[in-house]
Length: 237
Ligand code: OAD
Image (cartoon, protein in one colour):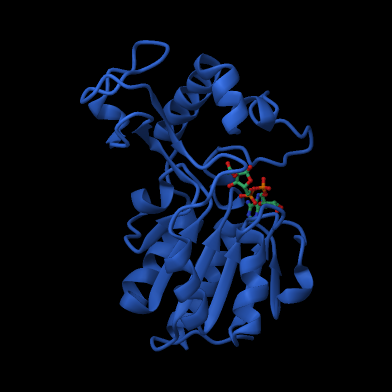
């Protein structure tokens, strides 16, 4: 078993699977649809240009849904891990639901954006949705009246904070990957990179994910059950 001690530099990558036990659906459920929509109808720049009202309706609904969701024992275990490891802990998430922050994690990189914020397509300002009049079908920037868009990284767009992520991958001793199918790049390539650079790699997932061969250790099951046990064990050793 890979050991994690107070001196271990631990980097975590999470995906939709960690929020499944909070009642939020993952992307690649068996029907291949995301909350009844094809990904290309709501999560691409082309979809935004074609039908921005549909895209906003979709993300507003996701935002309302995420506000009803609460962190589960998997999120809370990662918050305990950060309390214990301090600056030796970093978390990259592909999720946009804000549940890691709600659980108490502070060293979080939301590489695919956040449902709680939006961007002005004219002046570039980033705003919390609570600061914006969300009643129009196409919300407008309160600063310049430009059109606002969801602060989500869509397919074909560049994920946020990649240079920082690169440094974290270079410096980590252990790379823990939780609840991601490992098919969406660049996140899917992080395990290979971390391992190549010398980190030990651990996967926690309900099912074997893509790239399983790059993991030194695989824990199959629900994140909400496995993570609390792993964290207890590491902290007790
Ligand atoms: P996916 O839906 O592709 O994968 C979810 C993963 O979680 C699968 O591997 C499941 O086996 C696993 N899983 C489900 N329930 C679990 C549980 N309770 N405990 C542990 N694992 C569980 O979601 P992501 O990999 O996050 O991008 O998807 C990556 C990106 O594709 C998303 O960030 C999103 C999407 O399109 C954008 O929106 C840009």
